[in-house]
Image (cartoon, rainbow, N blue to C red; front, side):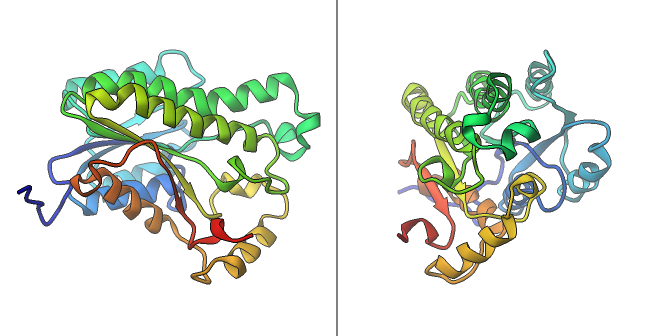
Length: 259
């Protein structure tokens, strides 16, 4: 019989990409992993962002705080080179980054430029595939990968615009990666939180109205927070969820089940 420790992620090594500040979903994941016993490496987007991320990294005793802008050639590879040198392995990967140019995000899909669509797809979706390719060799004993999605990938959410098709591609990528990496004992999940007050979400038109509507519609009657997302990912990364892979996991108080 398998025995599970009190800290089910003790000894695990996690990389969390996408912390911008203490309201980030990625921060909820990093904090939860730390509380469950994992060592957590984190990244920051730029020197401008670093002062907001560095205190959070210090709070969880992160052994690595690394720059990462996935649009800059070589930075992603440099992150994994550092992880290889420092740990020699990886157990958990969280991809929590998304971007679309403001004009393409706030306009309708018909008005989205080819360039804007390509940027959104590269940063928000294909960068996860690139991360998975670099992370997989470090997961020699298996591991878990997560990418952050949203309900707008499957149903039309007004004002979500180009990010709907992009997140749909991300969820499909998670399923195909789960299939390709399954023989190596690597599990891949798309995580679909309910709407949260994050910096990324602030770019969406009428976002406050979306928050209020979601809270009213959810069976649990309230919004989720970043720790709800982090702890759910923590569970999915433990041996308790060892036979789960390729899912889109909704963490939204049940709002997605409502018509």
